Length: 307
Image (tube, rainbow, N blue to C red; front, side):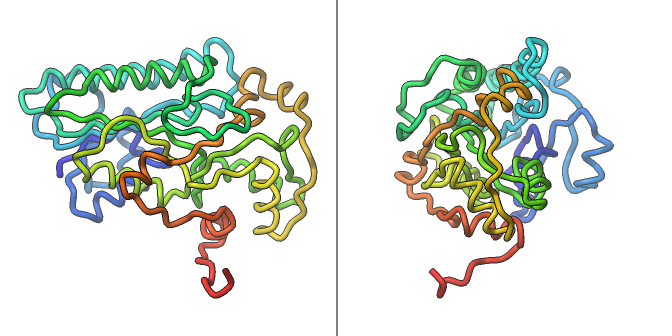
């Protein structure tokens, strides 16, 4: 397939691009920093510096849109919230324009979103049908999704990736959590009862490929493992895998002081489950948090005889 990818140098995008190349797909990536991208992919992909000079996406079989400013890297000032939104909305809107302008448009448009679409859902089990809470993360994701869905037609199907916390060997949430946890200074946030919907990077990539190659699938998909964990459980398991204590609780007021409005990212959560993905026949490799953490931290597969 000929595939256009945005966000190809990010946590998910870089792993996905390598996987697509290994499967002999032809990949074009959109990147403002071509020099940095070339250090990663060399001449194995084609490079587009922008979308403004393009008039259509004729010739592509698929578009995978993963671009966006990292949501947890900076405090949510009004300016930063604007950056978070525009970094997603502008590219997605432009991709939709180009798909609609194509004489032979891509057969599938897979576009990013997040489990944050639902807002803080407390202890409720969250499927793709759950009514969202109207807060910033929902507002960001709702428009992001709407812009992508506008590309849908009888010739282009649209799949939305409502992604949870991605567990990967490098980058993502673990890059921030591992240093204090390795020092024995880790622990849960707030009361620790909030749910964390997680997914192993291998399952994330496999899930995207599944959506790419199953033409009957469209709409939103919770890209999360089947068994989300309480923040307290996640912290305890991470400490166990690292053989370190993990009981230093970070009070809610301290998180709010550090992160402001963005504290909802760690003090709130979603007990999201991958209902539509599993109903479609997708099989997860990593169901258990312990096995997923052991794999990404130590590069080990758990001995099935110990189950």
